Image 1 (tube, rainbow, N blue to C red):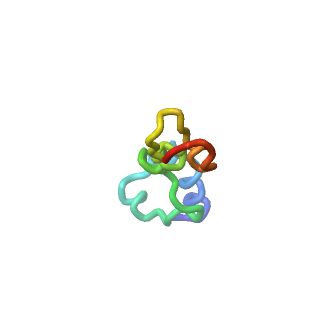
Image 2: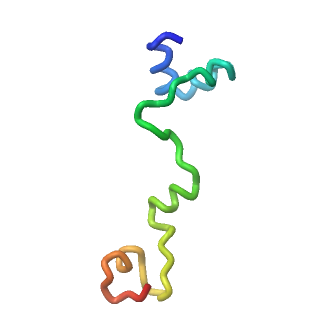
Image 3: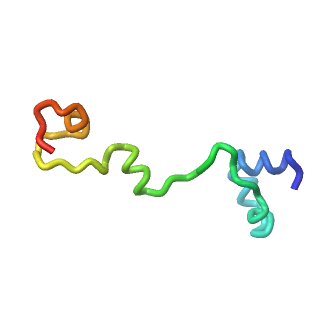
Length: 70
């Protein structure tokens, strides 16, 4: 695959979807790393993974340790 086509496949999801299975299998990994995150990683990044024991405690107060029981 030509370099220009490889970059287009990284940037253009419509073009990437138009490739055959074999062509997609030949694509090199994107240089910036992981392109999609699964639901669990998105929740963790958003702070949804913080579990607290007090009902008025938020992720912010838990992280700041001000008036919150964790």
